[in-house]
Length: 79
Image 1 (cartoon, rainbow, N blue to C red):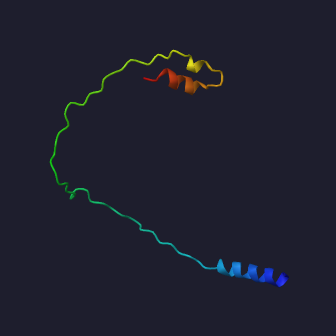
Image 2: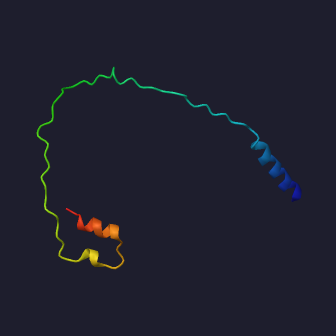
Image 3: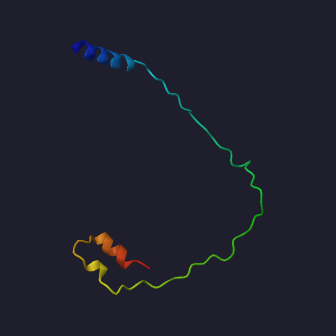
């Protein structure tokens, strides 16, 4: 039994002795100036966002004692 354990430990230490050298690229650049996109160029139309009123809850969601201050602010600022 002892011989088996010693053999297993010696094989595992022998396998860990390899030095692996990994070499990465030092620098890589992309030239986006020569990039061509096929298709039609369209300007966007009128982009507008309608302002909505704040939501008023019927129940007091933020009146619970286990809510922290950030949760209370988030609930009050829901739209």
